[in-house]
Image 1 (cartoon, rainbow, N blue to C red):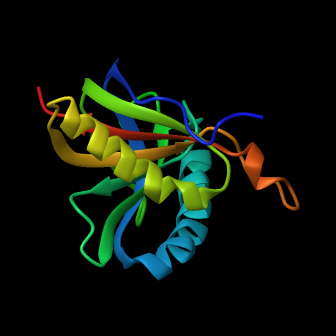
Image 2 (tube, rainbow, N blue to C red):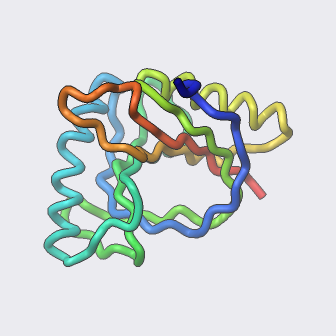
Length: 157
């Protein structure tokens, strides 16, 4: 059986274009934002004839303060021209601290905390942009232990 999380790592990430629905929401409202955003994003991408280039993401802007400034996101190969609620964002290229989490989504919050603490202990400074990328798609009735999520924080140069 796999450990819930691997060891933190620092990687160079290329620029990443995203199609997003961005909103400021209370933690309790995050699932409803995802439920609203993904159909809108995939619909807009389908209408534009654009395929996702990587698994979906949730991008957190700044520090949570009882609410999250959250972009529900789908990576795309080229900059996306917005369509109504679905807009474009780009994550700039640079160093990123990552941590692979295996298991239930309830482990994501503690994984962020572990990653931020690890980065600080290494003398690394976070920029205020963090994200989780859902590497596996949960299946109805599936085992949450099979989920894999990559948690990442962008690092200052």
